[in-house]
Image (cartoon, rainbow, N blue to C red):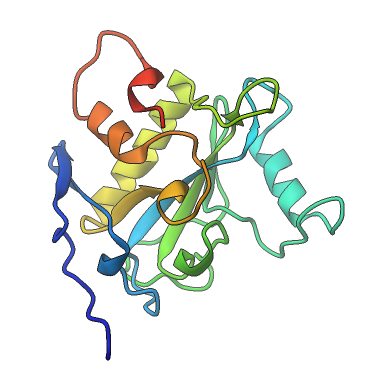
Length: 196
């Protein structure tokens, strides 16, 4: 019996921010055989909090270095990486609705052909013993700008955390709560509001 893809929004709406509607994600709303752009997955690099030697270039170099020194990947693993003070694009997207081979990155297994992958540096505590939401205010701002740009281009696209499609802590925070956090005004930055 053929499974029918559920309509986007059938699971509900998280919130609307600046005219951008963020939908509740369920796997049944995604067609994993299609190259149509269906969402963006947020990742963390799983690096210790505050370690300044971890740069977007260092993350990509490690992923592309031959095994056993690295992962041995042939292309950068993410479309973009948010560093401590900068955003570096490696595989940019265009405004058509198809995720072509020059836009595909390798961050989330079966979702790679229809989702973009964005990573921020951090995601682990300083001791490197457990996952931790380490987003700085600058990283948060850069990541939110990427998400808003994505939603303007692909209004029906999902914005999810890697942990919503895989049994991992990545990106070390709750993406739906993070989206709700950005729908409200705040006197000061408080990442505790969207922890796992």
